Image 1 (cartoon, helix red, strand yellow):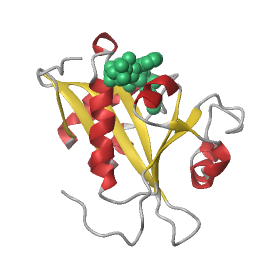
Image 2 (cartoon, rainbow, N blue to C red):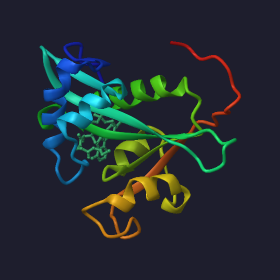
Image 3 (cartoon, helix red, strand yellow):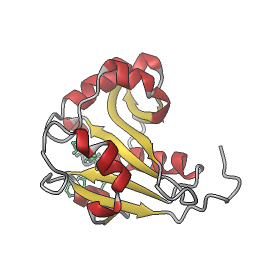
Image 4 (cartoon, protein in one colour):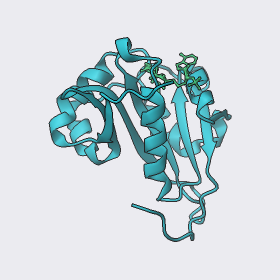
Length: 174
Ligand SMILES: CC(C)(COP(=O)(O)OP(=O)(O)OC[C@H]1O[C@@H](n2cnc3c(N)ncnc32)[C@H](O)[C@@H]1OP(=O)(O)O)[C@@H](O)C(=O)NCCC(=O)NCCS
């Protein structure tokens, strides 16, 4: 697939928040809604795809500590969206790969996602995992879900990209 040169993937800034809000709101069944306030407070954990000054794709992440203080936290990929008319052109892949490069420097144990798009994440190396392995996510996130009464009946599929991050590891670029 030829990379679209009219689309750039970059760190988000506060000025992007309305565009990010619109992109996420376009997928009410697939994505957890986010308020403007929540987007602004987490803007340093967002990347955007931009075309001609317009936000056409988004991705974010959050950090999930493990109960074992020696274990590296996991990082959850969230809010992955690509505008409908621009899908299947490699933009989603660019967003996920760039986000993984960015969060890898923190040496997470794994990168996880709960998703309705398992085929897409499978193409990027994610493998299906049991939700029971994601206790922090279940207690901190899923327990407060207003859509499904239990994470075990929620149709979202849990997937992980193991990175083997070691807490004591040093270094990492940029
Ligand atoms: C999922 C989504 C982000 C994919 O974005 P995209 O830009 O269309 O994906 P890409 O073009 O980069 O696709 C990357 C690969 O996944 C494949 N793929 C993408 N969507 C797919 C799907 N629904 N089913 C099967 N394969 C898919 C592509 O064919 C491509 O395969 P390749 O390895 O041969 O290149 C986009 O469809 C979307 O915004 N969906 C709505 C929101 C959503 O469900 N987000 C995910 C929840 S976290």
